[in-house]
Length: 328
Image (cartoon, rainbow, N blue to C red; front, top):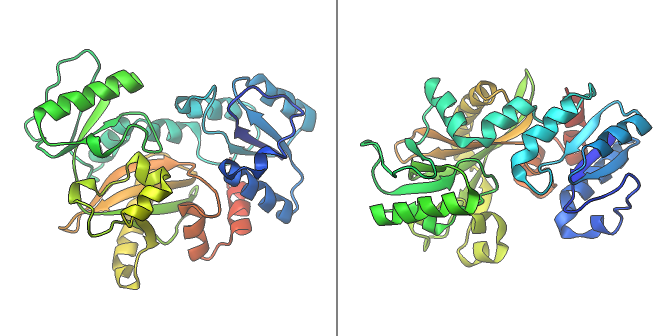
């Protein structure tokens, strides 16, 4: 087996990652490698930065029967995840995780929402604002709105300022996205409600694990209840505002079943495989609204996907083993 992960600087075929793996930032890699050892898999590792040729050299050297892929960026750009996966698919070796087509569809929030809207799933009403064009909203988009980069992930570019209530604020935020990320701005209706994350595993036969919900302290205003960058990555901020993730309570068993049916259908429409997490909203009226899909979410033991899998009956080594078995 060849295990790939991304690194922030050029590397070599015989790089020693022993010290790197001690860092909290490397918890996913550390957890996965420990699980692979426990499962008895022999493996070689390679940190990928900006030289795809090293991957080919490692393949020629070790002749792996499967590639465990954790590469999410190339040359420090998250926008290259689908490209590096395409390169791996060309090697004719089974690769773990979602395929390049599913990654491409999901990384572009506009495309994924258009596909699902066409298939009658509810998505937020939205408009796309291109750089250099007059900012103009369709009549069915009313304030409050939320402005996001169209092709970023991990809540990049999303803060409390992303929710806008006036034309002036809208223009300022759209211009911010254009200038900072050099891409289209996605302007959506702000959908109030419960934010729920559903982890899905599988290719043809799909398994939905118990859903997790983001909760906010009572002092957090309604228009601040969404997964901003600080909510996702700033633990002190979350403690201050009593923001947490929890499993759905037992009384929500009917909701869990609805989520499973809906999310399995969305997973298939977006051509996902391997594993993914779907972010949904449950409105006060009881509608399920698709927010976005995250192919190949973080696999650290203390992150949502692995925690949901454990709640659903798969301990961490079993989960890693299933992901390998699904490699295509």
